[in-house]
Amino acid sequence: RRDSTPPWKRKGSTASKTQRPVDVEEPREESFGYGIKSDLPSTFQGDRGGAAEDAELLAELRAISSGAGATRFSDNEGPPADAMPPSRPNTSFGSKVKPPSNPPSIRRASAPTPAAQTDLGEPTPASEEVTEENLGPSLTSRDWKVRAQCYELLHQLLAKRLERNKNARGKIDADSILDNLDSSVAAMAEDTNVGALDKALGFLFLYADACRKAGDPEQAASMARSLVKKNALSSRPSTLKLASDLVMKLIEVGSDGSSSAHAVIEVLISEGLKAKKPKVVLASATLIRSAGLDYGVGVLPLPLVEQAIPRILSNQNAKVREIGLNILAHLCRAMSK
Image 1 (cartoon, rainbow, N blue to C red):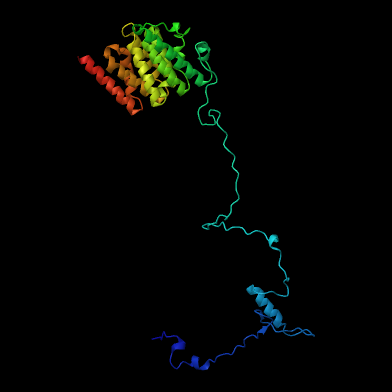
Image 2: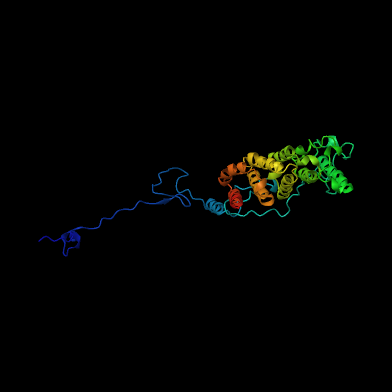
């Protein structure tokens, strides 16, 4: 049986007795200065041979490395303070830069005074004063304030005519107030300024109630088309309320039975429900439902309404689809009776 114990661990091993430690001579170290040692022997011969050690130089080197004290290499006076570059703030990530204690004052330019306001902050008046003499030309003014004055003046003139003769409601000739007024009312409903449009809708409501021409189906359809075409049915809620009241008034004052109602609703179906503006589609569907509820199914052009039901029910707007269901339910109730 072989012994697996290594030879150096065996008792009485001859290898441990015969082997002797070998003395290895370490290299001689010679110092050539502070912190620098060489393993090579010095072989320099001459007057300046030997160890290059200078106690004074070593002391100065220690002072320089520690950053304290002046040395023989430094000047007596340092550079002037204004010659030193300004210290840059620490802008590293996470560091906080303190603002200067006395920041320089910044002169801010004053905002220009708006042209539409005076020094007291009040709106500037219109560029011209509207009177009965210049009322006609002023209706086409580019200044919306001038147009708003025209609508207000027309409202006042028509209201005074009704006060003098209360029985004249629905019989007044609009051209007696202003030449070609009947042919101008449709353009008033297309005013692009919402402030002037509100004034125009207020006058048009009184016009529809007081003037004879407003009961004509063609005139009613023309005014309804202007409401759908521009911003009246897609503007702010107050403007939409005025426009909706005007549409219902045009249906009410029809002179030939339900002809005006058919003409107005036909415009709402053919143009309002096909409009690109979702607000116009919603307002048109709402007006069709309101006409059937307020004035009865008899005023509705039933063939056109039946054809429009699928379009209303397939609209992307849930509110429009709900109105379509209401119209369909109202028609079913009316037909069952």
